[in-house]
Length: 448
Image (cartoon, rainbow, N blue to C red):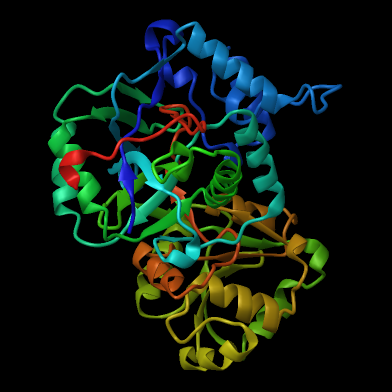
């Protein structure tokens, strides 16, 4: 079962830092170098100094960005830049963001401390594979600064009525913060401390599995850190803070839980031309051509058609240049059963991204070098890259419904890299959770 706990979070003191929007940032793993440098310039207390500090000439084991992060945090706490809650709390976090045709969506999450569980316990489910490099980096940071600086983003299934009622009640008060970022996303945060509300939430999550949307590397790093702390802490117990990790939990029923597709670009270095790519696909896919012209406006029309048709089958978009956009429909979905023996997708309900990876790239194209594939969420960028000769082909994917993600990973599957892009990203810097071995969490007595 999921163990959910309130905690005494640290937050920026807006009386000291001014505009909260100037000190927050996107998650560390989606920050390009240019933005990283800009965030360092933006404000002397921007959270980038904690999550992704600058490397300096001469850095070594005695002086490096991880140790500087620890000093920054300690200094900011001592000088009142960071303030700690006087009592344990949950936080309600909503993001209102622009959507298609001038509309807006709202995604509401609950920030709390969740007990760490190995994946085999079937409480927390991953959907992506991880790499050792990022985990080593995050572990070095946690060892120097035992604080969760960013939230793991998870979604949960099941009826969410009672949880939603508690969150809505909390949002009837004034928020702790309310600001917009450069992308037009509005961010608001509320404090939730009422004992009966806290108890309701702790109880409501006891029988719910959690699915990681973003933060796989950080979650697995937290597991490693927990084991280190257990070995070193003679006074340990199940409610020690290092047994938990800070998460934002969003209902699978939330209308604002948006997954954007990540499209694939094949590099020109692969050496196959557009006509050959189409020929290789003909045995497996039916083709329908659409005239796209030299402008880019018509692309959205075809992507919407692709999404509509994708509700009833496996449909992809292909662009290899010129004025033609191709809709590819898998001819024999039942034939996917034959791929299982070779490590391919399982059955006719396999996700499109798995079909693209196993059937098209690996079997049909025999494209085994991952360096030949590039990724983008921007459809117009994908189109331009092919048009300007910087990519041989662009494959366009439909978004994956979160229910399909949950169904796939519940069976133990891991999806190919860059299968999902949950939008918008959670901001880093709204709240911090200390996991120092001296820290413990309280079990809300009214929930027992």
